[in-house]
Every structure is written in C-alpha cells, then in structure tokens.
Figure 1 (cartoon, rainbow, N blue to C red):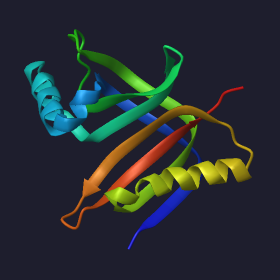
Figure 2 (figure 1 turned 180 degrees about the horizontal axis):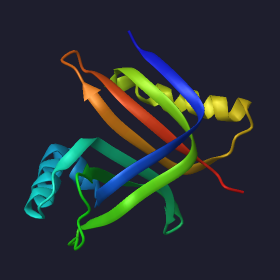
Figure 3 (figure 1 turned 90 degrees about the vertical axis):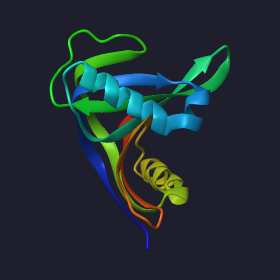
Length: 155
C-alpha cells in the first residue's frame, strides 16, 4: 500500500557532496555510474554515505526545454581536489522546499510530484524548475521509499 506524506516547508541540507551530471545514455547503466562514483570517492580517501540523490533541473538549451539530471553522493569528509567529470561541494543547502515522503511502487513515484504540484497550486506557491529525489530504500516487492524536495521560487 502506498503513502505520500508532505510538508509545505522543509530545508534540504547535504554535506561533502560529489556530483556528476548524467548524460542520456548514462540512464541505461546507472548502477555502473554509481559504482564508478563510489570507487572514485574511495580512491580519494573518503567513504560514500547515505543514499543516492538525484537532482533534476529544467533548462532551456537551444530554445528547447530539457531536463538536466545530476547524481549526488555524500561522503564522510570533504574531498578537496575533485577531477572531472565530478564536482564537489562542501555544503548544499536549499531552504524552504516543499517536501514529500513517498512509500510505494517506483512506477507511481510521479504521484508524489503531482501531489506537491497540486498543493503548490492550491496554496499559491510558486515552484522553481528544480527538485531533488533521495532514494532512501527499496524492498523486494519493488516498493521504494523516496524523499522529494521541490524548490520554491525566490521572488
């Protein structure tokens, strides 16, 4: 049975983050990309911690709306010299996000986005074109636990 809890205002805070922008072909081998990220982090003397985080941001590229997706991984300590294709951030803090905690089939994850979008409409909240999805857990029944943070627009 699925469930979506929500909050109108929550802060997302990530520490010691390594990021990699994903290309379209990367989605076919996402598990391999994550393993490569984890191996890179370990080679730099750090340990990956927590779940994988996905950042999606709409951008206009060549007059077309495209979604740029980035994989994020937190580490136990900050990595000073990060080599491409990776980037490092000591802290990512996004204040005043709409938040949903989703439990259910992965195929229904879009319902959590829909719920937040409807609530934002009803509450007259303007959302930016950016969201973060934290894949907290997955069980054998293909049910997942995910936390979604949708950034509000700063006027």
